[in-house]
Length: 269
Image (cartoon, rainbow, N blue to C red; front, top):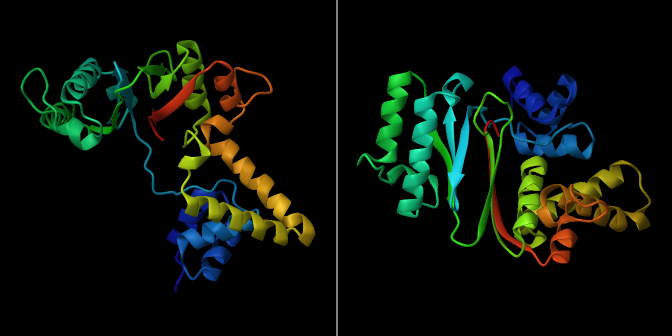
């Protein structure tokens, strides 16, 4: 398969690898993007293993009473527009009233004006001349805590975390701030798909062999590196930012608190 300059650029943008390394990985993977990313990871040439197909956007997050939405826009000028911010708050109200738990249901919800969220968003977008949309929406029905973070003083919140929990509200707040800062993807290890875990093990083993580690030490090395992966992506495995020398799970357990589930919406993520 012919490798184009665009293919190489895409892989470089996704991994931070050098041009020749990216071209070689794509060639050896016969143009398969995911296999090329994996090969760069194994050889330690990928600075970040992420897909390059996510477009950055602007906008805000808004929420209350167990609801959280991400309202996307193209520029920060629109993100702080009073009509845009006002519509976001109206959408939150509509989400709560309709019991909308995802974007599709949020767009179908009815505002106080009688218009659907989808129609109101399209109308405002046409008025301000920018592409806007409800990018994410969630609604939890248990005991919840909402944390909204401002990245800049002159902008509305652009990172939002909604947690459903049992136990202490102060600890739920600490966990929400942890999620905002550290971006875990799962609450517990059990939520991590088995195929992802197996892939991390395979990459860790291949990396260890590439590094020339002794055969007898490989299983222990794999276990350690997969444990490191869990610390990156699993909330309860992460080191607690508010409690020295404790994991989030241990800190929550000591306070008789459990995070049942969470969502994290971040502008540009």
